[in-house]
Structure formats: structure tokens, C-alpha cells
Amino acid sequence: MRRHRVLLSLLVWGAIAAAIAAIVPPAIAQSLCPAPALSRLTRHRIAAGETLAAIAQRYSVIPATIIGFNPTLQNGLPPVGTEIVIPPYNGIRVEVPAGQTWRDVAARYGVRADVLFEINGCQPQPRVVFVPGVNWSPTGATAAQPTGVLTGYPLPSEATILQAYGWQVSPATDSRVHSGVELAAQPGTPVLATGSGTIAFAGSQNGANLVVINHAQGLQTRYARLESIAVRVGQTVQAGDRIGTSATSLHFEVRANSSLGWVAQNPSTYIRNLNLRTQ
View 1 (cartoon, one colour):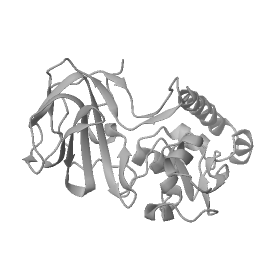
View 2 (cartoon, one colour):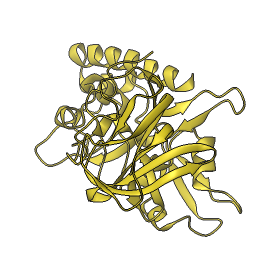
View 3 (tube, helix red, strand yellow):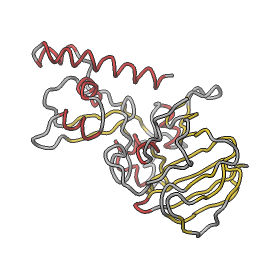
View 4 (tube, one colour):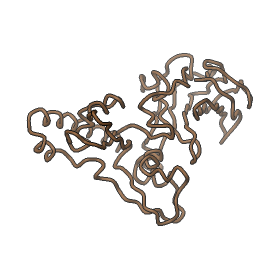
């Protein structure tokens, strides 16, 4: 998959960049590194009939990444002909606070320092950096600090991830965005609320049972492909409350409210241990 190739490339180049930085002067190190990610932004002119999702798919990034680089998109797509910028892969642009270095930024966002160093052109003291793999959200970058609103796990025990969040290969369309995670579960397994909130939807959608919970701080969780539903619209629930049972698996999403609607987030940012077990 393209996404896997990109990640592998970042890791390999990151290790090389760290070695370069340790043994050669900064000016020479910069000349041996790829151009900074922020110098490789693609300019896209919005055409009639385009949607944010279609633009994101074209450039193999998620919609939130494009919104983060183009704040005006928080109010919806601008007029046809408007130019927007798109980074080469998912991530955010961060201003380095005075007195801090790219190492401090790496620690803050939980990314490898060598990867961050390389992807920003091996600059010793950058003022603005690109942080890869961090998803923009209306309330800030989602990988920085989980909010604490979602304190539970959607199943009674940690489950294997059958399909991860993000760009996935699809035989029909070559690639697509998977807006949540698919968790392995036996039929009849209790499905649990991951945080306190109010049931916003409980019923069938697109031929499958779905429960949607609205939480504090503009967050929402969605539990799809349920075998049964045990809650009703308007009901309040707490973390750990049973909201239904699973069928052959559980599709789980976390979304954040914005002017563009409920934007999908990486669930593993909010739910502890959600990304520890993969198939």
C-alpha cells in the first residue's frame, strides 16, 4: 500500500538523517536530506462539483489534513477557482515555540525525532515544522493530548483490529478512507459506551444497526454493525454501559464536531490500547 511505503520511507530516511546529523556539519547534512515537506505542498484549484472527500482521495490524504492547512475550509468549500494547498502526506504544520527545538516538538506529539528531523529537511533550528501522522481537529491536533472524555473501551476486553483507521486499499477503487476501526468480536458480545453522553441515534442505517453517542467537548462515538440495540434516542449513558451486542465484528468511530460536520478522527488517539493488537 502507498501508505505503508510512505511510512517505511520516513523511517528509513529518518535513521539515515540522524546518522548524518551526528557526523557532518549542519549545512552539509541539509544538502543530503530530501526537501522539507512544507516546501513540497501541492496547489490545487477547486473545480465545479468537487467535494472535500474527493479532493482528499485524489491526493491520498484524509479531509482533516486539508482543512488543517486551509483554515477557510472550516466554513465549507470556497468558490470554484479558489486555490488550496495540500501536503504530500497526512500531518500538521506546527510553529516551534521560542526556546524549543524540533526534539521538543517530537516529544510533544509522540513522533520519532529522527523522522521529524529528516522530513523537515534536516534543519537544525526550524521555526515551523511539519509533523507527520498527526491528524488535525477543530480543537487541536488529535495526537497531542487526548481529552479524557472517552475513558472506556467499546468491548469487554481488548480486541484484534481487523481493519485500521485511515487510507486502505480497496479492490474496487484502489484506495479509500476507513473512517474508524473494525474490531473482532464474537456474535452477541456486549458493546459498551466509551464515555458518558447522550444517545443521538439508535436504529438501522444502510441495512445495519447503529448507535451514535454525543459526548462533551464536541466529540461523538459511533458503534456500527450491531446485532442488537439496548438504548434509545435521548437516553444518557456512562462509560461502560451496555448499548447493544456485536454481530460478527464491531465498527467503531470517533468524530469531532466542526462547521463541516462530524469529522472522523483516529480512534486510537482517544481510546487507550486500541492500537495494540492487529491482525
